[in-house]
Length: 121
Image (cartoon, rainbow, N blue to C red; front, top):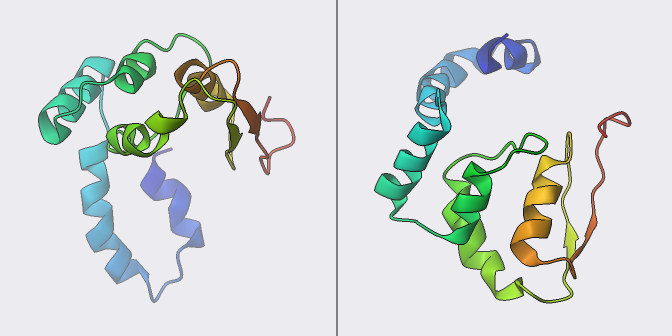
């Protein structure tokens, strides 16, 4: 079931005409392969940093991120690399992003990672 169909029951009927305009743009953020995500990030945002390499090379738990966030995360979080950073991430699903942040920030970083799904990992 696609994103549009999953969210539809939660969208009030009055909002549906406006939501349909927005839904058309969601498809630009979906990709078939890691290679197409990589190309989009490199070409559209001019980003070629370490966080992209970690994201693309991930073989562990799935990491769900909007692709255009990767350069933004690097811009704001790079100053915390290698430090004893405390990190809060709300909504971690299967924990893939926690593994990504540990590799990106360092083993010194500690995370607090709540999720509404008590079975998430």
